[in-house]
Amino acid sequence: MKIEAITLREIRMPLVHFFETSFGRTTERRILLVTLHTGGPEGWGECVAGEGPFYSEESVDTAWYALENYLAQALLGKTIAKGTEIPPLLTRVRGHRMAKGALENAVWDAEAQERQVPLARLLGGTQAEITCGVSIGIQDSVEQLLEKIQTELSAGYRRIKVKCKPGWDVEVFEKIRARWPDILLSCDANSAYTLDQIEHLKQFDRFNLLMIEQPLWHDDFYFHAQLQKQLKTAICLDEAIHNRRDTQAAIELGACRIINIKVGRVGGFSEAVAVHNVAQKAGIPVWCGGMLETGIGRSHNIALSTLPNFKLPGDVSASKRYWKEDIIEPAVEVSPQGFIKVPEGVGRGFKIKIELIEKLTVRKKQLANSN
Ligand code: OSB
Ligand code: MG
Image (cartoon, rainbow, N blue to C red; front, side):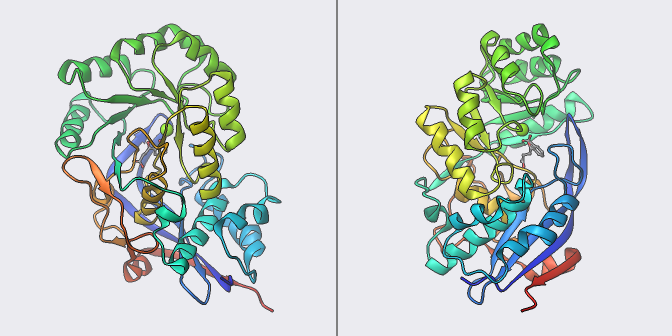
């Protein structure tokens, strides 16, 4: 495919319900979408950067800056056969993984259409359905949290993950376990603790949690390894894993027993598959994380989750948990048993609702080579 032009656009979409983590509350998403114009099929990618640099260093605005000034320029006018050709073209720019991921994934999205295969198959996927969990943010009261958990269990979700932070942890887990002693339950701290709180963190072992996600610093393996030695509960790393080398280093150090893969956090599908492979070789299960994506990112997460070492339920859930109306059709749906059936059609398997996207667009820029 020849990359003839690239459109960057920002859309705004209010969340059905606010989402709160240890680093803050989101009520409306700003989402950067990338469209690749190739002469053939159009490729779409979603940048998962947040509104501010709180989950990682990136934000919608830094991603726009990197894409407009450097990353798009590296691809415009080039003829590309495969998504795997993209990372070497972008390595001159350091970091900006979420921006790079949006661009690379748009190439895979177009490539799957061009080759007339499902995106899941192009990535090497083998699973026909994926197992779904939910991530439930910090609520205004524990009662509200319990109500939300009840709703999600009734909808069929097979793993409940609750966000936690000091003051919203052990007492909350007590109440959850009192009502549901046996559900698959995990927690995500988004780096809310330090090693000084090790005695407190050891109390988490009482609740038979599937894992505790990123309890310590966002950029740390060493102290997570120390913590893991003293905890029965498996540590899962999210923020700290940026690539396959991090994966290997974290595993060799004993910093985690599980890895969360977010395709944007590692810079695109090529690196996500590489992280998956390193973990698989080491016998470490992975699962697919979420970043409050619209249907475009969601469809890409579904495709990635079909790889064989995605052995634990992911944070890939139904469109309606986040959006009144999603920007793809059909919307992503989860069966009453808690599975998403992977689309068998060509490409991402969901159509783009371009009219709706145009209505939601607050800025848009088409980039093309002048020669
Ligand atoms: O740490 O997994 C996280 C959302 C925003 C930023 C970080 C995280 C999350 C989630 C949401 O947990 C998962 C989802 O999209 O359902
Ligand atoms: Mg997380």
